[in-house]
Amino acid sequence: QVQLVESGGGLVQAGASLRLSCAASGRTFSSYAMGWFRQAPGKEREFVAAISMSSSTRYTDSVKGRFTISRDNAKNTVFLLMNSLKPEDTAVYYCAAKPFRVVPITIPDDYDYWGQGTQVTVSS
Image 1 (cartoon, rainbow, N blue to C red):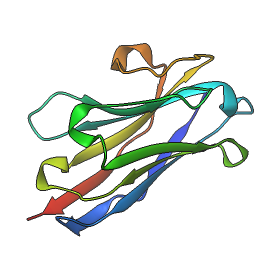
Image 2 (cartoon, rainbow, N blue to C red; image 1 turned 60 degrees about the vertical axis):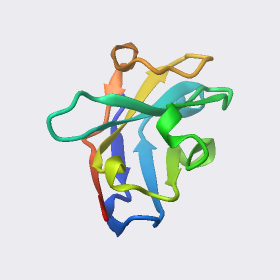
Image 3 (cartoon, rainbow, N blue to C red; image 1 turned 180 degrees about the vertical axis):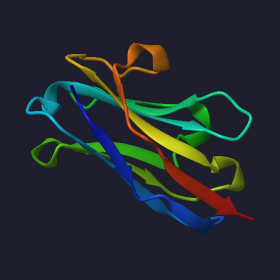
């Protein structure tokens, strides 16, 4: 069983930056594919960014050039650095994990474990 705990959300103004963190339990974190998803009120959960166990990355088009996903295997943590935030980035952000996957995963149903989420609110 893998436990994921997100942190770093908050209320910021448009144009600001935030860095989300997701700490994972388990001794094989380096073999996990990790992803970030978000869900705004009344909308479906959508893919934001993903990183494979080999650190290959994928991003949804709306965040390319603004968001960066990275991982620190020594700390069992994946990060999402969000720059130039926009009001439309407002959502609950979730991290997800899939053990032993060498490619980035963009489909929510492919992940095995999920965190509880952290709220990001961007005011205009």
